[in-house]
Amino acid sequence: MAVQKYYLCSSLVQRSPDSSVLKNISEPLEQDIEGPSSSKNDSDLEGMSNEPKCFSQNELDDLVRDLNLSKQASELLASRLKEKNLLSSDTKISFYRERDKELPRYFSEENGTTFY
Image (cartoon, rainbow, N blue to C red):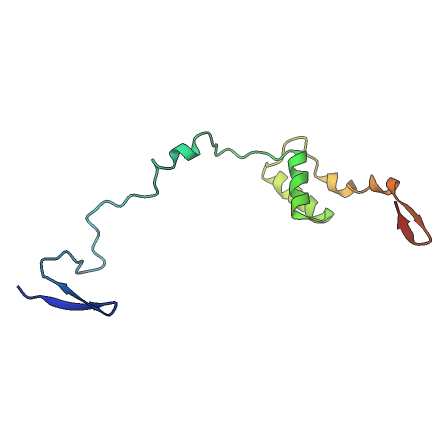
């Protein structure tokens, strides 16, 4: 029985002809390869639904605020979400056009200076 020598990571590795080394890398493996673990994480996914959840007006407002979106960007986001049926029926897209109309009553302007 002849022993072949191979160098691996600067160290000598001896292999006998009987050892199980793939002769051709394209040979399929004999052992079954499991796909993504299904049994391990199933308990984590219980109760989760694949159904989309629609944004309410409050949730959309929070998202717009968290992303610091302008009025124009907010309206664009709301419009795109509406196209994908991801907004609840009572959510208004045009809400962001008028979101700051309420504020001027709290401020006054005199000689080019605005104050509270």
